Length: 281
Image (cartoon, rainbow, N blue to C red; front, top):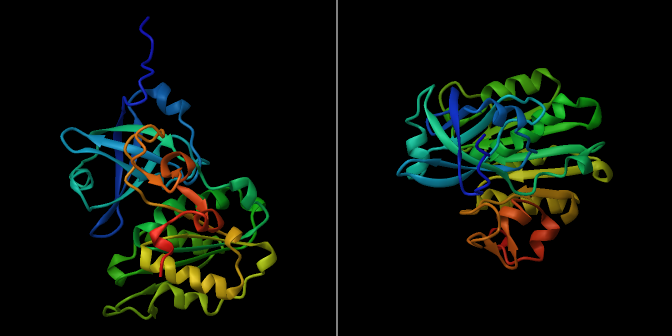
């Protein structure tokens, strides 16, 4: 009987089971490995990523946006940006893509147990945090209060609306803001940092998890520091163009660390020791 390949660079084929359109630029692809044994054996943790490939389009890292507490398929939430992601947005149910992984250091879920968790995200940045939120909700008695602050450019750009609605029904405090209002929008207008103003977390038991564009990232860090969060109480996931995923090519070098194996999840304390441009300014 032929043995399975041990080639770490060989993608496994996965079929598109469902496509959930989040907004005009973001869609969530629900995938399952074509080989049932691969699908049954697949395990991962929130914060890890897959390397996704399509013929003639190359390969790119994409965070897993589904929780490991719901096995059977993999959710990849993808913003249309480059050649590969544009090609993915042309996929239909039943099409196949190549997947390698999971890779990377995940969020330290055991360390988060018993803590109040504050999630701050902008745009597609909610995708990797979505995996953490749903893991917490599926194991609700292990975690404290859960709060989500989410910023988008316009109301039409708000992604994961079905999740946000379900989270609210499950008792989560979910606060939204947009950069520019549209007709019918009666919610907050302004930067996501403005949503932090009314919060009074119990700092002794709180952890903040943030993910978003660099400008948002820096602004949120400043606000969290002013609120009294220490660098050890802030976690984020860093975006880097990771090629191999296994620490060989060193393409994602970060001042002595590799995003693909030492991250992509880092505490702010760890990032302070590195020369990370997102922290500048």
